[in-house]
Structures are given as C-alpha cells and as structure tokens.
Amino acid sequence: MIELFKPTWMIETAYQIDPQALKRHGIRAVFSDLDNTLTAWNNPNGTPEMRDWMQRLKAAGIPLIIISNNTAKRVGKAVEALDLPFMARSLKPLGFGITRARQKLGLKKSEVLMVGDQLMTDIAAANSAGVRSALVKPLISTDKWVTKINRLAEKPVMKQLKRRFPEEIQWQEKIN
Image 1 (tube, rainbow, N blue to C red):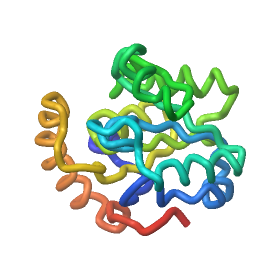
Image 2 (image 1 turned 120 degrees about the horizontal axis):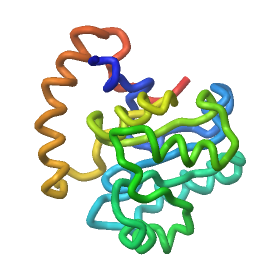
Image 3 (image 1 turned 135 degrees about the vertical axis):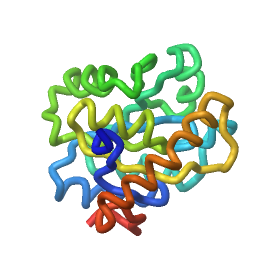
C-alpha cells in the first residue's frame, strides 16, 4: 500500500528538471500539478525561473500539460497567460486524468513524468496511472485549506516511506 505514495524522484523544484535528462530516460511529456508546483497557488503568473523552464522543455520538444483537480474555469484562468494545455477535474489521486492526457498524446506510460508537490494526490495519481513521478517541495509554505489536510496526512506517510526505502526517498539536486 505504501508504494502508492512512492515518488520516482524527489527534486526541490520542477524547474531543476533538465529536459535532456528526461530525454535520456525516454520521457516525452511532462504533466504537472499547478498550485504550489508550477506556480505559487496565490501567484498564477509564475516566476522567470518557471518561464525559463517552460522554454527549455519547449525547445527540447517536450510538451508540458497541467493536470489539476480544479474546474476548467479555474485552471483555464490560471494558465491563460502561460498558454498551456490542461486536464481539469482530473480526480487525483485516481489516475484517470493522467491516463486521459497520456492517451490523447498517444504516449506509453514509460514516456510520461508527473510532477507534483503532494504525495496524497499527485504522486498517488502518477502511480495509479503507472507513470513516473517527481515530488517537488511546495513553492510557498501556505496552502489552501483542503491542501492543509493533505499535508497533515503526508507526514506519517513520508516517515513510513523513508523507513521502508531509505536509499530512494531522499531529495536530489537533479534527475540523472
């Protein structure tokens, strides 16, 4: 059961994920959570680092797609300035949204990376969909009320993961 929450990689921020490393791993698309993963939940315009990372992905031919539990109206408004495709109401922690987006692109499970800041939704959804995942630290320390509940539940899960997989559950500088 604990394996459902085990990320493939743990990186400080999504922006540290090098497109060339993704290509070496056969990853052809990046799916990302929005709030506190790609952008701070209270700053949908993002940062220069985020925009640089998006450009590097684009230059490498790796599409970036938002996978969110929010409504299409909310996600559409949040990503309008970023010009990103998205899958709203994805039902994370279930893998349905990831699977739909992957199938729409005609990709194999091994060709997709899901990036998110929550074990209980993003990483569980990635594992449910059978794709690789990167857990990132939240961009800011504040969360919406519903996310605060998940963060409380994550603490004992992370302790269990570290106990069961001590070599694998560690923060890394990059994906090699």
